[in-house]
Length: 117
Image: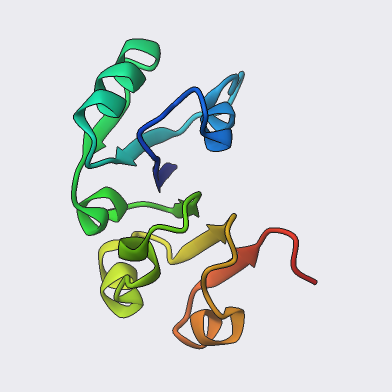
């Protein structure tokens, strides 16, 4: 399984940082999209096997799952049809509720938003 996500630059302050601790028995290849070299360097120190890329679509290439962990404009403005084309399995877990569930599902994604009913 390939999971992909985008992180912010301040790892100590980012709640999503805790998402990547642990993982006992989980077999997944993780790819991070970040445009902040400092964040990439710190993240690679802790998780040397992670692949860091800058392009969001490249980050999602061949992914089985995309985790949305930020409300950044570039994530909100993703071309979801293009995103679906590059993914192996069109599945999104939206931790920030930035997308309309009906619209995303209508495009053929499996979509889960955190905290919505």
